Image (cartoon, rainbow, N blue to C red; front, side):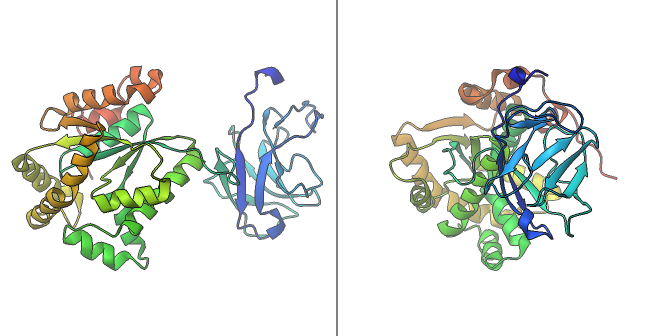
Amino acid sequence: MNPGELKPNTFFIEVSGAGLPEVDGLFVPSTAPPAESESGTVSSLGYWNGKMAWDRADGKCERSPALSYSNSYKSWRICRLDGHLAYDITSDEAMPPTEPQWHVYKKGVAPAPKVVIHHFDPREPLPKPNVIFVLGGPGSGKGTMCELAQAQLGWTHLSVGTLLRAEREAGGPTAALIEETMAAGKLLPREISVGLLKNAMDNAIRTTGNLNFLVDGFPRSLDNLEGWYEVYGREAELPEMLYFECPYDELEKRILGRSKYSGRSDDNIESLKLRFDTFKAETLPTLELFKSHNKVVEVDASQSREDVYAVVVKHLEADTDPALIAQPLTEKSEMLLGLRPYPKRT
């Protein structure tokens, strides 16, 4: 590939947890001038051996680039400050692998570091996300539609309920409060829910570059909305909302059907009643506020899944890659729509 055909290297890499602490730090796109590598390949700005390459942000490493790919060894490599190789990983991927364990090279010290790729410079403020709030009664199908939009349309689906359950399972200082409050069908303090949501959004923006978010189950109250304002400011435009409307009898039928396999402690008739009462008392006033600003798209969630999904696609298409809209349904999407059975558990 000719240098003129290469996409600019706009990624940043964070290296942490190395047994050799000098290796840790931020790595930025290499600005090394063209040079011939050990395999005879001439480098270009931000690249080495035809793949993206990075220098240390502090400029202390003798070797440039300090994180690069070797054609001779088919591996990614990270250097010590004196330029000797410290860690490597055999891989022909386009970017340095982030999941597999790296190898401790001759001049390295165990353990090998963790590598995280950032789509934006972590030293700078993140770009603002494009957010659509998604609300509806328990069992309205909003989560399924958000999963579909993620699998099929490339939107990032963040469920506040899922984030809270993960935090509870992690056993942190708020785990007991989350368990007690969710089982009672009540709402958590905004500091908890908004804090988890912001952290998840920031992490997704940095590591995926995606700015399109469907925030499922938020804001459940005017207090939640106050928490949003505290983080993103009142001057920011109020996000739009997809509201999934479904009769209570249908919600009850869906929740009881879901309880057979969901494993959720709040999927029972008692919790449903409490959650629905909380929804009417806390969430409906929030919905009315959004309606007063013409920010609500109401979706009849009692329709077929395909019909509901068609409404969702129509609303998201302006911010969605047309190629993703046009692509055939994936197997996962067909299962979510009920067009294909889920694999039987063995």
